[in-house]
Image (cartoon, rainbow, N blue to C red; front, side):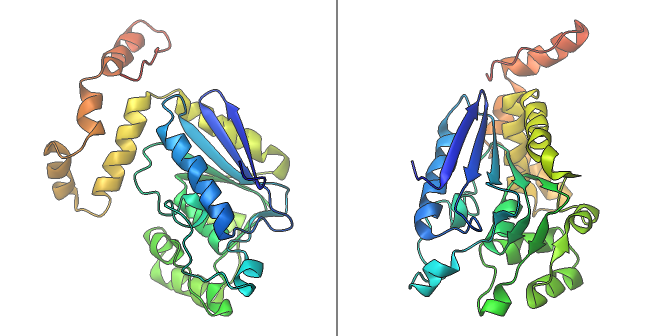
Length: 261
């Protein structure tokens, strides 16, 4: 395993800690290693939720390693099958990922966080896409994902000026789910992950699939698509043992026992 990554397995929850002092910047080699971890998470049936964070309290990730860039690593280098940071282009990952953002999430670090399904951040978190000031563009998802959250004028300001967005502003815009004190960051992310684990695994997988397949469609067309039989996980969950277990457990006033089938 790449020494820049620390992997912690806590039952069905996988924690991935990026540890590349001083700024947790990501070069191609680290990106490939992160991709391997995320694909292992995808393929392991025992794992339900992943948490990605950065070591230390100052940087979640400063994004692309500019020292590697200065040594010749190109902006369009091969960063692995999952794209930059192993997650930004891992489109068919039907398990949730939580980004626990501590401190600065700049450039590709912000794009990594945006590629997650949920973001918990510390009160000292700062977000920015400064690529234009470096002569490049945020093409690892920033310019594609951010406009789906923010109004065009705000996106334009962020990407054209590189200004910093503080945690509370990110919360107001709906970029992050929670803002907590730095000392509470991982506890909050783990609490959120544990809450997801309480839901039926097939249902969570189907929800990710439905969202991915219909988020760009008008509502009526989205209905037709999910009823068409084109999806894999949605029909499976409707006829699963878990779909019977949930109502039965509710009627019997007990916690459901999910079997994932």
